Length: 393
Image (cartoon, rainbow, N blue to C red; front, side, top):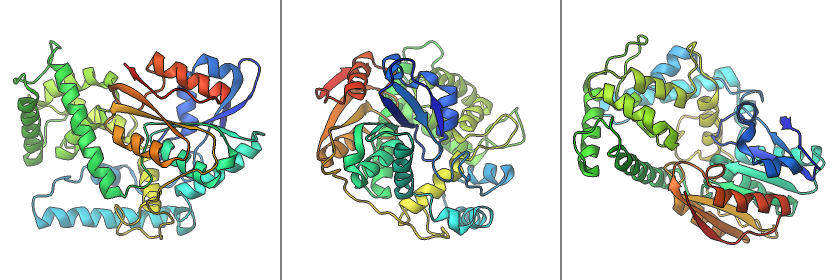
C-alpha cells in the first residue's frame, strides 16, 4: 500500500485502483499525485495498493524478455492450422511457465474475490468504518464485487469506465471490439483535420481500408525496425493502434507512427506497443501483462485460459450490492475499452446505482471533464448523491 496524506482536515481515506487488472497502484500513485482533485485531497488520505500477484505483492512471473516478446507477437488473425497450432503451443507454454515460476498456491488466489476481501481488511486497517473508493476500468469490476460482498461497508464509491460483471468474456470481447472500432472512427475524423494525417482517403470508410491494408502488409512481411532485432508484424501494429485509442493524448504520436508505417518503417509503432505492454527501455517487462493473464484466468476460466493450471473461482454474475448507499457509475460515450453500454448495465444492476455520462473520447472520465469532476468530487466528500447527468468534454 502507499499513502498520500490529506492536505487539510482529514475525513478519512480514499482507496484507488487504477485498473488492469495488473496495473501497480503503488507505482501509478507515485507517478500521478494529481489523479484526485485538490478538493478531495484536502479531506482524504489518498491510498492505493498492489493487488495480489501485482507489482510488490508477490508478483506473478511467467516468462523472460525474449519469450514475452515472442508471445506478444503471436499472429492475432491466424490464416491456417499451422498458425493456430503455434498460438496454442505458446498458450500452453505461457501457462506452464506461470505454474513453474509462480506456483499453484499464488495463482489460485489472485482473483477479484480474494482482492475484494483484501480491500475490506485494508479498510479496517485504515480505520474507516465505511470504504471511500475510486476505481478505474478493471477497478470498477473489483469495486462492484466488493460492494456486492460488503454492501454495508461502503461509504462512497465511484466506478469510472465500468465493466459489467454479468458478462462472460466472449460478450465482453465482442463489445470491446465494437468500442475500439468506434474509437478508431473518432480518431480518423480528428486525423483528417490535422496536417500530418497519413491517410490518402478523407472518408472514415476509406481510411479504415487503408489501415486494414497496413495490417495485411505487416502480416505478410514485417515492417522495418531501426531500433532492435524485433519484427514489427501484424500483432505489433494492431496492438499499437489499439493502445493509442485509450487516451486522445496518444493520437498525435499515432499519426506520426502511421506516417512512417505507410512508408514501411514500424519503429515508432513498436515504441507505442512497448509502452502499452509495459516493456521498459532496458528490454525488461513490468509484470502488468502476466498479472493480467493470471487474474483474468481465475475470474473467467471458461473463456481465455483453456490450459491454465489452477481452477477458476469466479463466474459471470449480476451484482446488486443490496443495502449499500448510492454508488456512482461513470460511462464515456466513445470509450474503446469499456464501452458506454457496460456502464449503463452496471448502473441498472446495482440496487442504488447512479449513472453519470461523459460525452467524450478516450478511456475513463475523471480528471478530464470539469463538469463531471465537480459532481464526483462533491459526492466523494459529502457522500450525497449527485444528479444523474451528461457532461460534454
